[in-house]
Image (tube, rainbow, N blue to C red):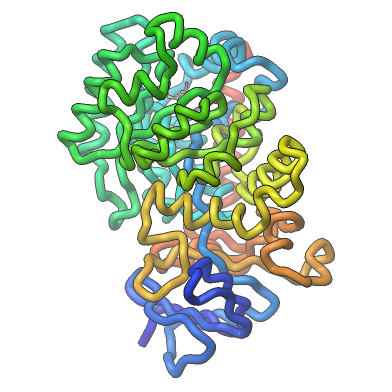
Length: 432
Ligand SMILES: CSC[C@H]1O[C@@H](n2cnc3c(O)ncnc32)[C@H](O)[C@@H]1O
Ligand SMILES: [Zn+2]
């Protein structure tokens, strides 16, 4: 007998061969999708009647700093450098491992509730984030952030911790955790340091998560220091490849895009964070046209201020239209691909699509809502009208994490209360 049978659903498979299925069924066994189609004779331990719901692949958040839920709304309306140096970094210096656990758990709760089934994270005290991921049931690609900032000792210590973390957690939580190396950015890590990270990562068979050309300031600083921009710098040291996940890429030139395409680098577009910090507008439509894999990320709650990928999809679709004066740019289906299949290509290609054999990471979106009525086109609704709060059921690795709006793995009230308490204590230490 199968574990889960979902029936009577509108199934948005994101599989180009299968397309959408009206009145479709999805069968799940041992963490994988075993059958998908119109009808099935299968019986199952759990049967979900998905009438009035859309079943789709879970959303993939390819760049965040989960524990920064602690700083949601703490420092708004500032430039990136000032925001980091005056507010975020001093506050982060006072944060404890326990705070990170609570902040990460809150992030996991928020993601489960808004339909995100996997995410890529870069932060510190990452054992705590890994423990939160393990408990919550989500899937994640985690990295300890590595920052040198002209301090060799700090760089070496960070790398040592990054290496320990990569080796300690790779494949943990029934294979739901992947570990990565996380050099912060080309303007906070030196060329030699980045080369060392590249070497360590390939030795461990680990992938790399990095911020890249988020601001014009990075472009200028790196050009002044090395006589070339960040992308060329990374390429010259053999850093780039399909194992690299680069967040932002706002200030990339045409020739940078050519390098990123040639090397098969995965890009995470963080449209709301880029808008909020006024970093600029990434040339997403050009990257997509070139065939570069561009997915979506929220960045941390300190610069977003939430983890709702439905908001991210809508904002991306709208911003690139007005920026190009072309309403045909980034249509709904393409944006859904960025939020699912393309994100999965960056983190785990065995997810992101509803197809027999894929890992069972999927969500049910409740379409019985005033703002989703009437429904001419499901894809349009998911991008332009739906919200994270319309997600009623979230399944990861074949396990139900939220069942009809009820989160099973976590005690919602307790997670919120404990984070609130931790932040109140943190405030008294930092003088926020
Ligand atoms: C070394 S851990 C990650 C580090 O990055 C900071 N951070 C959060 N958001 C951004 C962003 O948009 N650009 C650059 N750095 C960012 C985070 O607070 C940690 O200090
Ligand atoms: Zn970031």
